Length: 619
Image (cartoon, rainbow, N blue to C red):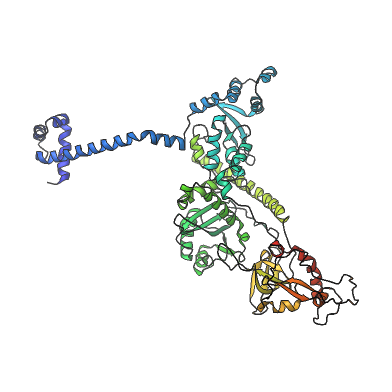
């Protein structure tokens, strides 16, 4: 007889008289089976074996339960310390226990402004709270401050935080919020909470955060004016890039970062490698099939993004493709900026959590998307989905931070469309304003002069890889500018020796018209024998000229020598007879210059002082 039939017969017999079956297993089971003639005849030994197995399991379960009960206080304390959930009664008691808020509650609950005599007896903190009298309300015995969103003008209730909970709030806003910056942390606090000096407390907490201090860096400055990309709707432009870092085993982990340019919604996906096949699979499965097909994808010129497979995938999907110029990450600024933010958030994790950072990517990107973006004025999550997500800080105060009302589907859709339409319009206006402001601030640091067609330039050396780059900062080849696109500060340069052309950004070029013509013609295959470094002060790099400059007159050629910068980073000496060619109208025996070349030399003499500090500064 099978075990299933034995158990079935046992259950049916025990339904008749379970108590008697337990007291006297053999006799009771036989009597019960006889009373139910439709049941199968089961030997007592089989029933006893089944019962014994259940008894043994119960004994083991009881032992396991006792073991859990012994550790229950530790489990409860861990859960309470990590994410305590306060009830409305507890929050009201904490407000009443606060010396300042208890007095404010006294007046607000009675809906009576204090008289001048009463105000004179109160502390300065109470008086400061009472200045918000028109915005203070009491709901379910808890004090709130009513405010309106600066952009959407929607009403929200801010929980007035007692002093005893400020430290808990700061940890929840900043530490548990991904160690984001001051503005983002303040934005998270303003959406939910209020207390005196809140902004200053958050700024000080972020400024003094140890994890942020040891992990974050500053922005580099650029030389070319900033040109912003404008978008007007979600998924109009999606930017992609690879970001890599080492895990706990020192193995490089490749992360495909995808950001929507308009909403600034960012996603990060761990990939096995940077192959085109992996990129295509992740884009289709994890982005296109969830958010929809974008109108255009923008990336750098990495081989995985420019492959035939990616071009074919985008072609059949009806998605356009664009790319940046080589070695110019600013051309993909939105995703590059998120890459730096993501790196800062990972570095700010505690050491024990940081070891497993690939598993934290989705949590970190979710927290980033829930925070107001300074460019749009809205959280990326809200612009994409039309609602505010719940965060751990909302669970902490779940009894007081739930303002959403239950509504029907039709009303919800109408409200959602209206709110999103208004939010997208405000976000576009805010983004345009912020981009203009950032461009003005950035362009104040613009260095260098415009480069014209025909100018001689050096190309920055970006081929050397590694942590410490010891190669020359510039390639040895002197290129000629053959075309320019002034709107995006991009130039087409040509190698005179090979005729090969490249399209590069202005920030990767250095104007070298100040070099002698004979030197420029031979620099491609020449290496200086001088041992001095090229890093000189601007005064040392000035080209010697005749002090009495009289156009068309004869100038005495001095036999002293002056220095100029060679392409390979060394200092080369040339006879001052060549330097007299820097003056228009002076006859040169060894070099015949056109009027244009003379103009270029006069223009670049003053430009020498604008050389990058890395090439003119004394070590």
